[in-house]
Image (cartoon, rainbow, N blue to C red; front, side, top):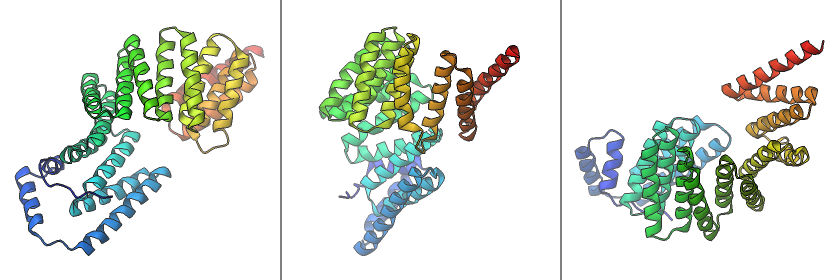
Length: 346
């Protein structure tokens, strides 16, 4: 159900963020309130905006991000005109997600701030929790660690105040990521362990899998391979139960790293086979790229150099297609080393 916006401070902030002077914004809103409302026209406009919102979601799913941004931008404009706050929040959330995916963190943060302003104006505490978490992640990606910590702590405070288990779990998990980024793996482990229990209470298997994977990473970084194995296996189980491929792949990669360190190639091969099943016959180009790279590493470690070279060549071709320049350079250097092997054998 759509909620009608309460015109007040939050919307004035929203317009100010868009570059509209606050005094003009308030006068403009007052003028709108004096205008008679034509419900039929409003409903027609809402239908158009809803269609644009869905169109943008389909375009984003298909990878046409610029078209999605245009559709959502227009949808948000219409929602503003008719005063539909809930849908504006959703639109700005979508915009933030795609801008972040494109690496445009400045635009992503602007969209999240607008989303947060609307959520505050309408006292939508659940939306505030997730907006603060998104803002924290964007700041962390830009290297603003202290600012990210403030955002995550704001989210956690709100989540505790309304006993929102999912929000508590997400906020604690993000604080764990922040601690890991600082190199404080002991603190990260503490955050992840508590976060995991809240995500289970919220019934979020995907979130629990993500937190377990992060816990595995923290244990592995501390050299606690036994505990890391347990965390990755748990993440893999939750990923399977929820059919979440991303968390399954992250867990599999963690397990491959541990068993590779132990030179347990039978176990490595078993998990590689599982990775192949999840990626090679799909349109997940990034997943396929990493699978080829992992297979190359496996064959190289076990002395099957011809097979290793073939896998690296396939990985290199995908890295070029996806414009993953650092990975492309790494794979190119590996392929050069094979030419050196061939030259010495001749």
